[in-house]
Length: 241
Ligand code: NAP
Image (cartoon, rainbow, N blue to C red):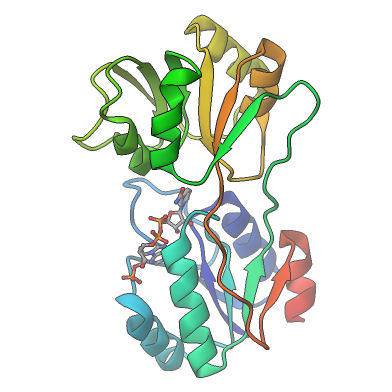
């Protein structure tokens, strides 16, 4: 099977290992946003395809049998392009299931639809903010002079950023102990995150510290076509056969 694996996530790296070990020909695709990316097993290509048409041309030229969308749930454009190109060429699409987070007793979560809505609500929830929306999300908070931010991202933020900002360059996985120490040490009083799903150490730490969470909801996922399926990471090799 020739597989195109749209990645940029820990799930995608895990899948690349599973599928190459099972003897499949896998090409992982990364957007190229990170200067020093963690590289998956197997072949890797880096950079955009050039929209739906570019992706369709790639699928055709490389005679891809199945596309796996293991991108981050907030990579909405890439997922839409994958759905459109696969639908047009009748290439099956496996979408890797990554459930969103659900609140537990003791959590104080405020859900919003967008980063803009998060920025509008934030000053009413706290003034010392742990911002974990990723580098591209930091600009949305640039006008909030009344808040102080600890922003954690893999890459440094761009020029549009809040005035009162400390940047922490780091990538997971993180532990609950570490997150608790980080938030307590910086006297954080509100956590901002996207509903990425996956490891939830920062959410557990926020619950234990009684810190409210401002959570940005996911963008809608593209509709599934007749050849498409949603599958958990570990079940993907079995689905491919
Ligand atoms: P996006 O807004 O959905 O995509 C914008 C454009 O970037 C796409 O149209 C495509 O360009 C290119 N692109 C995105 N993902 C690609 C991939 N895996 N391979 C090749 N081209 C890709 O994407 P994004 O939110 O900026 O995310 C970029 C990458 O970072 C994704 O791989 C995603 O899994 C990863 N990531 C994103 C987040 C997040 O919060 N968004 C968090 C962690 C990791 P063309 O139209 O030219 O093909």
